[in-house]
Length: 573
Ligand code: ACM
Ligand code: ZN
Image (cartoon, rainbow, N blue to C red; front, side, top):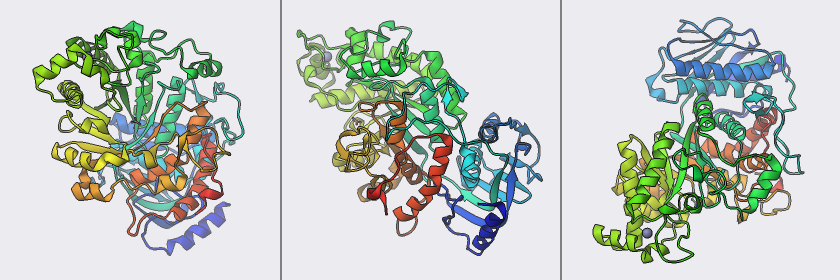
């Protein structure tokens, strides 16, 4: 749209009242802000436009730097922010400040005023200023999202991804830089619905390079998502360096029979399939600058075959070749010494308050035969192996609490064992009612990530012919992802405050390439981002209206080089 036409259409829009954001091409925001009011006029951002931030707040500098870095990519010219003492609109500039911010905006909320004279982003905390910057980028034309794919920490580096396949295009950027970005004048007041707005990725099944993880983080940030859970360990592989147990990486812990292994080597030709602690620290730092927390997941007491290949002494000592089915032994002290020793190192790498221990799908058959497990049950008065599982979770929960961290696990942790404050990830839709009551009774919290709306490794269309491989037979269409209700009636009745947020999970078993991972994630993560951030309007969300905004948002994804599934007939409202 030309600038004059644009201003004309904005003027017409001005007649609209202060309402939930209207749908206008170029202003179709995802996630939808709480309130947006269109004003007359426009502001032009150019490479020489100053970005000023209040000094003395390192995190605010991070927010300003990120906005500047995106603009640098859009213009292909360096844009550098500068500290400055202004507390109100600076003519011709973009100002980010915490001064005078409305405390009701909370830790992540912001106000954004785009006037013909300048842009003002005011937020009580730096995170809010960061999200104000993302909204500003979305208000601009899609080229504001321009970004050659990040490889080895450099934009525009050589692609390490495989060649494209029909439904699985590489995430390369074909968008040309622009000379300026014209942004309509608006007034936005915005804050998130939930504090936990997450995605999960699974390098234990399908290894991703650290640069791919960084790209994934970048794409979360552009959708105002703030947690990336990384499923670092499982039966197939242990992907983090642990100095005190070098046998955990690389060869001993990796399953030579894993068919993914050959594929991984073909695609990446990597010498190793784990992350060094230095690489992980660089990821944590990269994510932190984008206001994304890396929540590490180390699976225990089940899903531990890889751990047991590297540290067999953590297994049950029963007299059988099949001594372990992938569970550690919760009976012997040695197991706690090993696992807590590993966590000690990991807590140095991951500053996240939340540490995920998995604890799902634990086969407990060996525990019935293991003398150490049986003795532990007798000594502690535990009546079943489920209670033994609870005992294990309780000890890990205590341990993390002493270190100032909070345990997160899949919803099996709510069956028994977890301490007040712990977070259970509600993934098994069927058994939830009873567990929700337990969580409420025990002062625990929930993150909603049910298989029927939030498993992004599932197919996206029932036809299954026009998309690369999904997991199993289940289908989660874009519409279904958008219709996810994070506060189902039974939870609402028990206590809606139990729910800290939502998360989409991308398991790795069927993924062939990084573009495939993105294809599975988007646009369903756009739907999730809206559920995570935007209040539910009276009368419910409209998929048709979301779908319309998505049309504009796809242009942003194209500019950013984010691969995604193009909707087909079945996705039409
Ligand atoms: C899970 O899908 N096993 C949490
Ligand atoms: Zn045992």
